Length: 332
Image 1 (cartoon, one colour):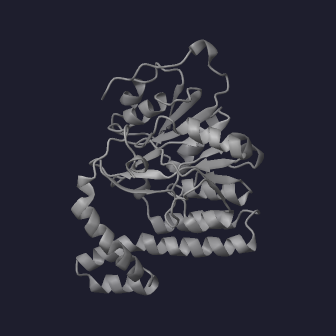
Image 2 (cartoon, helix red, strand yellow; image 1 turned 90 degrees about the vertical axis):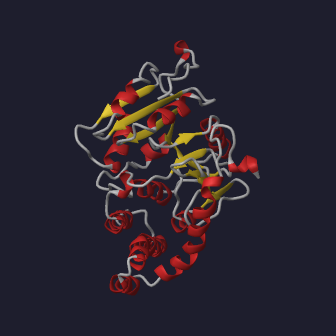
Image 3 (tube, helix red, strand yellow; image 1 turned 180 degrees about the vertical axis):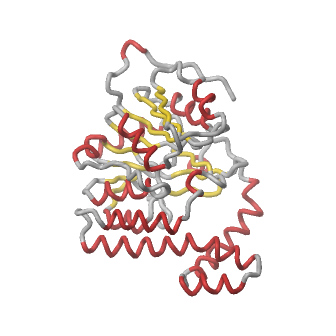
């Protein structure tokens, strides 16, 4: 692990209430969390705090984080036992003091100007929540996608989105949110959700009237890796819990209930697809047929995914990019 970079700030003028609180849940991320913390320390906006909550990791995550605690802006909390994503994110949110809340997973990292760009963008346009596209990196360091939502292309110009548009897009972003809005609307992470806590949190913000603006600059780097915290639970069961929670909110109008049900049904098809494709590969025709009867849309997903799978297998390893120097936007 590289040594922590020199901290560039004046401790005598640090805000009692920082401009931004960066929330980072951590579970077995020892190989990655050093880069995550250093990307926050490298921000051009230096008035921040980083609230890291360790969800009872069994690897060396704690030892790595301790190397960075000489920076007083880095705060570290520990769960006594593994509690899952919803509880861990909510504990970080409860501890946060910043004017803005930013989300950063422990195996991801920021571009150096991200916080300054997004906070400035939000304040300029009076937005309650702002987001940017994510650059998706494979484990071996190759970029294969850039996007802000599963079912929506990144906008070419900055723009606002309605609640219905966001629900249907199925966002995959890591936004920056105005803390005062969360407090006024009593919005917290749902501790009962161990996988879909992020999406339920963002959609609740929209259902309660937030103004969301998306800046079309990819400044968040997302590391795609197998067997992460979000892959340890049954996605269909977890999505069902999230949908039930969102439908129970008083702010969910009949129209938005319809959009939610349709969007989550579509997501169920995508969550079923890996099992369907695996059954086909193993020649388990009966299992594949049963899944297809329940979710006929998996055939359309198969037609869509085959060309992408072939492309990634043939070319993904050739598209190596240094995340600190170059982004797909700069290459274009």
